[in-house]
Length: 504
Ligand code: ZN
Image (cartoon, rainbow, N blue to C red):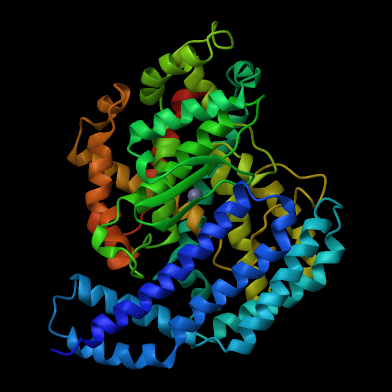
């Protein structure tokens, strides 16, 4: 019997996934152990592999095989593997094939130059140098969005690249509602006396911090036989296959919270990928269904578990065993409180749980205004500072800690890169409520250092499907309703009014 078009297509797309895996391995090495001298050749090698993967995906033969494969699977169940495989392959093919190769080359060159300039302009606090480049990025971002055809909002196609199905019309009211709840809550908490946290700023050897964090994420269910943990500058999780999913972390000798939060966070991303159905191996379905759903998994382990009273009632004992001198005068409750000190600052990646989303809201609002043309690039620096005062309640002294602080706008399009962070927090709360609704023993389990019920639940409901279920459908299915900020607002209010009773 002749091989089906489906099988041909599958073999071709497996090459795309494997070339990407090779590129990711080069990226992992670059971010962990590569000597600095390797940078120029590595940039070349990675660009070549990305281009090869792209060319294999948009090959006209893939288009022909897709048409035939779509006919072949027309009678298969719409929620089955074959139908999902073809649906997602069609979506990725159309999205990538719509972008002219000349634009991809021009945008790649522009982005590389912008990123290089940013690495110099940020330490020099030289925002003026970045403005003409940003102007061009904004222009090209609109062009990139336009290739995807008509959209209600210019940002919609950019958002769909990472959070498929989400639109500005859905997200804007959601962010506005969150802002209306969080800004006054953060202000009330800020006015209260902060609990003691001097002890997290004592001296902690980094190796011992990493060893403690690695032991905890192994207990969560991150499989070290199919993964590993290494230090880096900007932590991330990355996968070369379902059975080789690595996480990275960073820490500071004089601040114990950072390595814990980063490692717990990345373990959530790692477990998502390790939990994929093995059948998805080397297919386009072998990935998280969206940036927001991915982030819901990392935020759950970082915050719902890693900053919870239940978890520290268990984990403080092992922590004290690891650092007996530094923590001799501290108890579990004090440590829990120290992990949750609210101190509004100007840097997103150092934000506490309560004010984190305020940083995201500022960026989401500003990038929409830029794309709409209601904010000029020339006015961006001042708009940033003014919006920070209004939303976060602080103002940076410099542009380095203002508009230049995140790499996102200087290494890719403007639009679509930030909403996933806050979607992750909102979804983590909805998913948590669903998990605990079904398994009321989960919080008690966490207090005993048992995580398997929760891990099994997330694997069964979320992880194993990969991209086979689209994000909006998955949310309906797992949370039993649409995207809703209510559970997240309640969680934050309950937690922080308990920690800061006079904020109630
Ligand atoms: Zn993350």
